[in-house]
Amino acid sequence: MAETKCPLCGSESFYFKDAQDEYEVYEFDLKAGDLVFNLEVDESELPEITGEIETYCNRCAWHDKLRTLKP
Ligand SMILES: [Zn+2]
Image 1 (cartoon, rainbow, N blue to C red):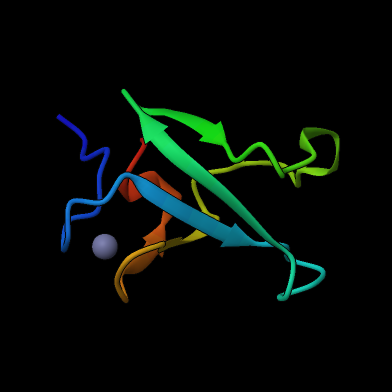
Image 2: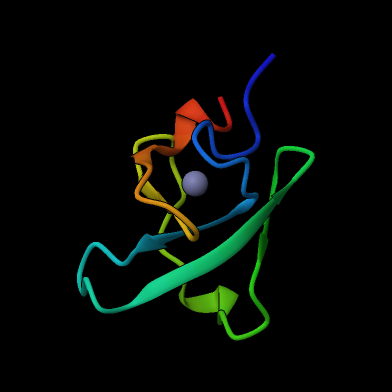
């Protein structure tokens, strides 16, 4: 059973950074294992989403590969 929330604080709110531009972030919630992006995110500009994307918790300092949350 995969974690779909932050292992440290239990938050379901995460973001990852654009590989091209670290100031560009894509916020999303994990709902039942699905990525639900923030309304401000333009999904047509999303990078390819793979398990290797470094993902950051919105509430605490946790970060790890996306696949640790969603295999
Ligand atoms: Zn957290």
